[in-house]
Image: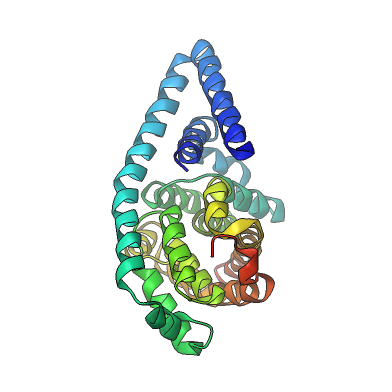
Length: 170
Length: 121
């Protein structure tokens, strides 16, 4: 309940901010609204299919399978599986949060879920092609080559720092 | 959750107008040192821009002679660190996890940036 009130207060601040900007500079106010609209459309078009996917996943994929391939005892195979699943990601990172959570609930380890999330965020084939085009092959390849070990390190450290009991939803 | 998303997206709208990506070019010139790298990393952590807008901007900065480390820091934190989306992430994974994931991603992004600055000098 307290959280809900906080959210409403924040929304009211945004609303007041919008009105203030509108009075001071109408063009800016309109660009805020049009940017908000385009991001809202993006989110609304991506989230429903993802939520359906999460729903199907929860029902159809057996817990034992996720435990076996991504669980605590999955070792290097689990790491590779998480890397592979993460690259299949589409769209922005926030889309991956509910998916990652449902993997965790099904018995995937914190390390592997972290790899999944970070890879989803940083390594997507279309994004890499885009980076090569605009920043050059050398820049993109080096950044990718450095990012992979960093993701493994981040995920390994997260596995040590965060316990399952620290994640209320898991 | 719906309330949270609306607030997040509306905040992004404000940020895009008052802190446009082009603004980053002011503080990551060729002579910008470590401050430029850190500012670029902070900027990338806060804003949320799609790759198809961010990469062309980063590319033009690089061609204008911007600091390679700063551009790398910006691109890396942009994809890996999400301060605006943290409330949504916390709903799924809790505060402790989200703090450490973002903090570690930020630190490693700086590391990647520094190494790239040395290699691609």
